[in-house]
Image (cartoon, rainbow, N blue to C red; front, top):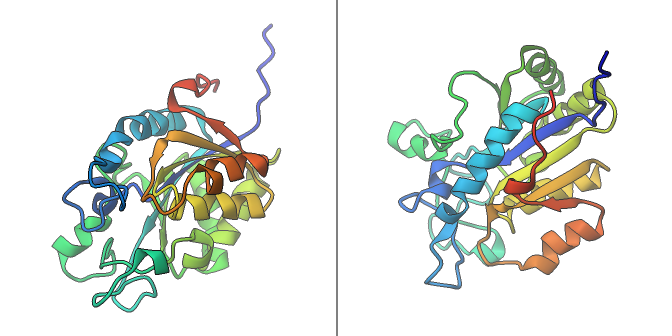
Length: 241
């Protein structure tokens, strides 16, 4: 009789892989703001797709986060946006009544779970967040977490309760595998936030892309110094469940 392998539970955490960020025609395409030759996030798309495919096969749940903005949100500036001050042109306007404008908030087709997903709205209560976590694990369905700030923990009222509920339900200190964009803004906020909450984190380096606001010393190197594991999409272990 073969004894089942024991492993740490896994959570896939996919940050902001939305049309406005991931497509060159998007309203806030992620590319190095200081290098006109940078082709941008399309270069990371194959690695992101590999990583999400692995997450679907190997993780206990896959969580997507996404900017879900309305006019009036702190980071939306229609007059004088300044990325160095944390303000940007309108993007990922998921709260917009204009379908074409709202479309920019949709996940790119290559990783979109479609209708087979639970949504955690940006104003979610703690009770609702815990229920979404419970149902996602029980039904083996993905979750899309809306947010109105760079950090999901600041931009979704139920995010802390949601993450805590996942960790409690899975036990054994689940490992969060993180990919997405932008490395130096929303991915950084996700990884820093998880590490602040003493989570076990693995960053998938090639499955991210940067705006050029911060270098490795303030992202990958810093996370490693705080105990995170750094890996690449080709090196993710085969699914064992």
